[in-house]
Each structure stands twice: as structure tokens, then as C-alpha cells.
Length: 77
Image 1 (spheres, rainbow, N blue to C red):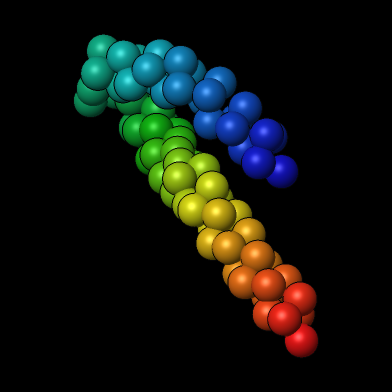
Image 2: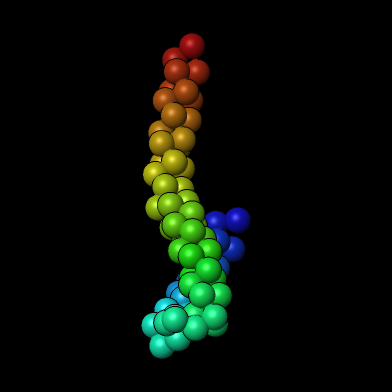
């Protein structure tokens, strides 16, 4: 799942830049309003995937540390 989200996040960046340029160039038009909605959805997707990609390594690291502590406790018993 992490690889898929990383791929989505990576490939959405150039598309986001193109949409941003299109929004700037079509301000005030009906097309510009539609592109702004698309841009807003893309920002939410970026925020969610970026947050996941940022916190996932920290979560895995803390989970491994807990597993080591539990294994050490079981070895002592």
C-alpha cells in the first residue's frame, strides 16, 4: 500500500503543477472554476498521502521497538 501511495503522490505532482498553471491562466472563466475544484481535491489528496508517507516510517519504527522490548521480556521469563 505504501508503494502505491508513494507512486500516486509522485505522479500527481506534475499534474498538479499543470492544473495550477491552467487555473492561473483561466481565472474568472467557468473552466477556471472547474479547475479550481480539481485543484482543491488534489490538495486534499496530497495532504493525506503526504501525511501517511511522513508518519508510516515513524509508526513502523515504534512498532519494531515495541516488538524488541516484548521479545526481550519473553526471553527473560
